[in-house]
Image (cartoon, rainbow, N blue to C red):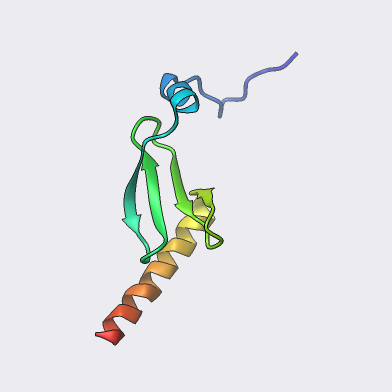
Length: 80
């Protein structure tokens, strides 16, 4: 018998997104070409990968984006 784990939640907004698609908005500009997005409906967060694909924004990707953002800001300050 299959049981639902406590991490799985029944959510109407996630059903809407899986049916009609997500409505992502940009929440953070990391560099000129890497951004973080968040769905307005289900609050799912994703980011651009370095290969150009989208990935789920987990702890590892948050740390990478934070370091990359700091590096990019320092680079911009030096250039100006």
